[in-house]
Length: 228
Ligand SMILES: C[S@@+](CC[C@H](N)C(=O)[O-])C[C@H]1O[C@@H](n2cnc3c(N)ncnc32)[C@H](O)[C@@H]1O
Image (cartoon, rainbow, N blue to C red; front, side):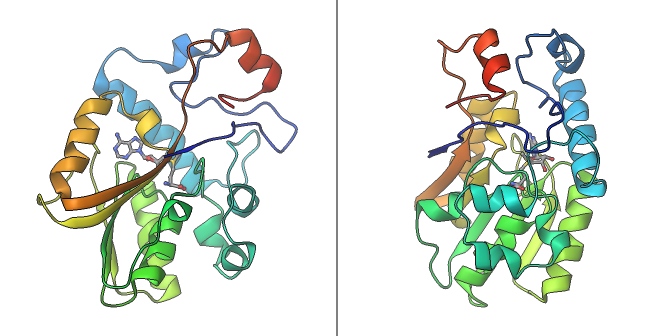
């Protein structure tokens, strides 16, 4: 697993909060609803903005520069249409955690606007297949347009949650995940779903955010980051 190096904002404005971010100013109370459905609704609204308004003020760390700063190959990022990279909001590079081989079947968990799915599909080649799952309709719509724009036929996207993946069991060689497990309220259930859909011997290549017990709200505020 790759651990994020933080979520400092590159734009000089106060970053938006992720829905489960501990906020020293108390904004967390406004962004942490009580029920799972409300929680998902807040997250969907947040990521709908990432999909449709990538140029908005005070945005999350996102876009092509963010991808390059996380270890993606700059030439590979620059060669993609801006529509593919502008809504990237991952926290690491799951593709850098292990080789994706030609012919493999890949699941992209929380696939967003589809950047990781597209890069994965290029690695598996036409003999392989990539399926992305995301619960935000605006992300699914954008990911579908992006795949069409780059002319790939071995990628598809399904709307759904990690906690109840709309997929058959024993179907995937590799699951990749970039910044979504931290947004799942029921992490054991989401991970159980990943295990269900992976084939025996399947791999999970995951980049995510870990909040250490010893990190205080003051430290988060001072460093402008979630984790180190
Ligand atoms: C931080 S973004 C990362 C998106 C993409 N992996 C990337 O690197 O650009 C998290 C994505 O996960 C989706 N998401 C969050 N919680 C989810 C859940 N429980 N089930 C499915 N998708 C979820 C959001 O809609 C969003 O598109």
